Amino acid sequence: MASVEMTTGQPEPSEESCQVDTIALGVGMQGEIVKVDTKYGPIHVTVCGDANKAALLTCHDIGLNHRSCFQGLFMCAGPDSKLLKNFCVYHIDLPGHEDNATEVPAELLPITEDKLGDMIDQVVKHFGISECLGLGVGYGAYVLTKYASRFRGMAGLILATPLANKASWYEWGNLKAATYQLHYSGLSNWVREYLITRLVHNGMMHRASDLTMAYRRDLDARAPSVLMHYLQAAMTREGLDELKSLKAQVLIFVGEKSPFCDESLDLNVKTASHGSLVAIEGAGTVTTEERPQEMTMPIDAFLQRLQQQDLEFELVAVLATFATDSDYDNKPGWTT
Image (cartoon, rainbow, N blue to C red; front, side, top):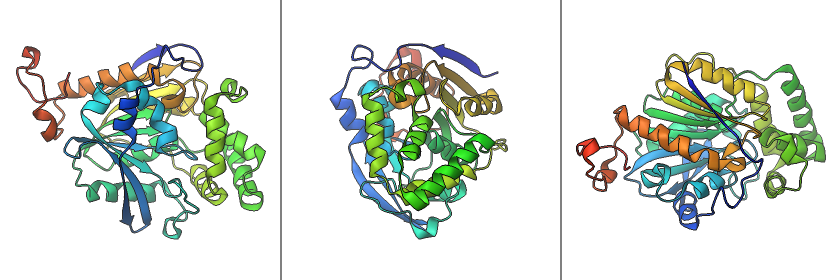
């Protein structure tokens, strides 16, 4: 049975609960931008850290990019966390979400999770990655999970409020209305606010919080056609029903105020034999930004468990830095 942990706290992280760590921000977010060519067009990847370390792939939610989706988590984690200390991070920006993008590659249309999975596979092959972890949010978590079910080198998944089922009739109707308006009228106020409700909880949305204001700016910077194509993909997505081939250990964070809370709980049931759930009270979908301080300890514990379970990670560059702790009898694993 999957383990469940409930975390509570204030709706927004305070300075006391999440200190801004500029070193961690540099290590986890700033890096070389690499354009990887695929049969569905180019995809941009920001590589942060030593490429000889174990690989961590990230995939953001619709309308955001790697900075607006993961910056809060990496700032809170700190440079000594297992998340930053032992991994080279490969931030994948879904096509059309990279800086100054104006459209989705024609070869990718219509967008499907299988096509995006093929693009991620090309990224993995381009960088010579044989084993990795995945970190995804919302639709990005859904894409990574679908990809992990066929890529046996995905040893672990850290998922923030993942989509897991077909769109409900209610969601389908909203997406249909949103794609119609994006096609004929561009990004209207209603569409912008609807997209915000998919990302953060309503209580935060109705306040002039820094996060919601930043997300509104992010959405304004996206080409309406890009948003339209990805919402169409979300509208026609398949459910994650066939996961027998998924061997990765799974850690799911679910924002209890997210419209996709029930889907995330369903995925937890489907991965019960090799997964854990952390429920975050009062948070929306993007817990990496709303409540990053409540994610760091469970993530470190999850990575520690992977180490103890002897998953076959190639941590060649990390071996030289491992502490010769008697508890580990000089056995290779993540630094502690």
